[in-house]
Length: 403
Image (cartoon, rainbow, N blue to C red):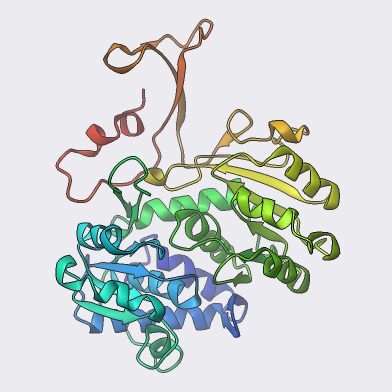
């Protein structure tokens, strides 16, 4: 058997939930529903399939697809087999896609069938040796893990091993891959369970992309850790989500503020029974005051959680719970009304000046308009950046050393 009973690994999160509640519903996607035992067995079969391709511990496996049960299984299979998962935005094409495939060193790509040609066209220049379709046909990863015997794996996986390269969006420069260990992500899951009030009876609905750390690591994986019945949709559509919340009696939902705006302003909003929804999560930006006020008016029992985080440390760093978000919707934002998560050390420092002339100011005394920086030193921190010579404390000095 792979792994160690003394190690805290990402796939171990699922294994423990399966041991506690084997027959409970873990995930529903389209017309497929997985119990925790079924999902755990499928992950082991998928891990054996990846190792059967000739992959060895530490190899990079790119994931290029929309939300699906197969996408989640692919991630957990990489974790169980000691491979490093590389999630890639499915909207990327051409040079942007080639850069991530090549820079990450991915030798295997897990892809949706509709996206396969975009990867096939780049194989010669990126080093991708094998392409395996995630779903929708014979020979896909999903087809091979639906049933059959559950093999024994002989790969040893520890909590300090890499499990994922999470790339930044590349808004201001080339994307950078944060090297995340099993330990970092498991600490994040525990932090999110505690800080975001995640419960087994939440009946969460998941619609944001799983290639993004928030949907996968702040919500889906932590809810799997507590044994919730999760529903996953391929892509967010406001009308479809409103229908699903009503029909599925979902109690929790995470979305970017833009999606919350679209749902609150949709013609179906007033005609749907959304009374089951008790927890509303959002992040990346402040929720517009009028939209928050409308949601609160229509759903007085709905509690709002605003999350803030950094990819290099996994997320979230801070969050604001319903008790901390002010009653005045126009001022509802996480920073300033938030608390740092567990497994995290946060410091506030005051600096004056800019660039080479900047200097740290004493904590005591008034703040005369100086810049304030949060510094974080958690076990959630990335272990480094791939293909960079600088030690981590040179790349992110404030995160590692404090200020």
